[in-house]
Length: 143
Image (cartoon, one colour):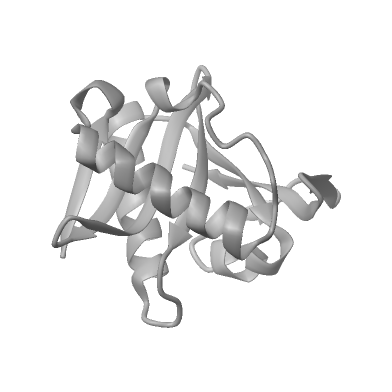
């Protein structure tokens, strides 16, 4: 399994296809949520993913939201309970620090995943809100 970190112009067509496939698999099919995944942010994002034999196993993207603030999102793992999410998050934070040198990372976390993000230092900074019919909260990781 390899960690791949690329900006949009450097993604290959097969990599982009696999990324969009797993994002649809997790966020549209598994979560039964029709929403606009292709939102115009991918072209400005840093894409991090674990890949094995051409298949994306875990993924996240990050982009500059405003000076000094990076938005992390689309965090997913294809399999659960094997520690891959923790490994992805740690790698993502490290690469975001290197690539952007931000003062903080923000995320709109699904409420069921709050504890996952708290383990690496994210703290809630909003009330619960619905995003595409799914409860979320905003969280921040000061750096």
